[in-house]
Length: 180
Image (cartoon, rainbow, N blue to C red; front, top):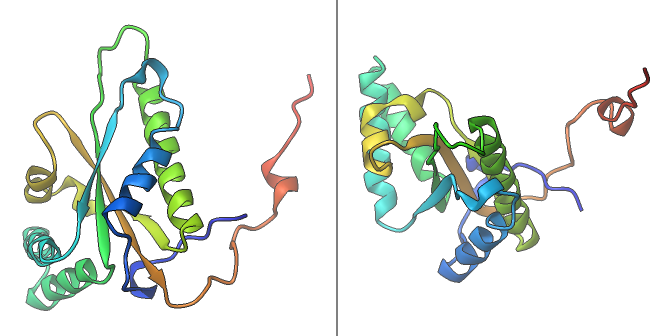
């Protein structure tokens, strides 16, 4: 079964409940994690907390030089998905056995597992990042000292089933055999 990304403007209520979010995190925890460092954590934003997050997005837009209309649009975008999940990285830069690139790979595996579990439960989702992850106000709201804001997972019920993957070329282009 393929997983298709569904953007926030195509997500509606209901979003996953606490038990379903816990199952998604359990799936994320199954990703390879060399040394079991757990270089990530998830922070769910739902209910009334969504409005607070929207205000933070508007403030980040203003700090980035957007006018009031742009700030309002960013706030509106933050409110689109029924549930947002902040993804935070906790990297051990000096780990003697697990280089940083392997810790990033663990984060990527966890994200893929999280989104696959959401899909299997009937939810749509998409990982979102961009310039906002560098905003100091958003980072302060979601991160502990020394952590990095990776982005947000938008979750909800898809308005319609996606048509399918948009990847071009398929397996023939994605899988190649090395020959010396």
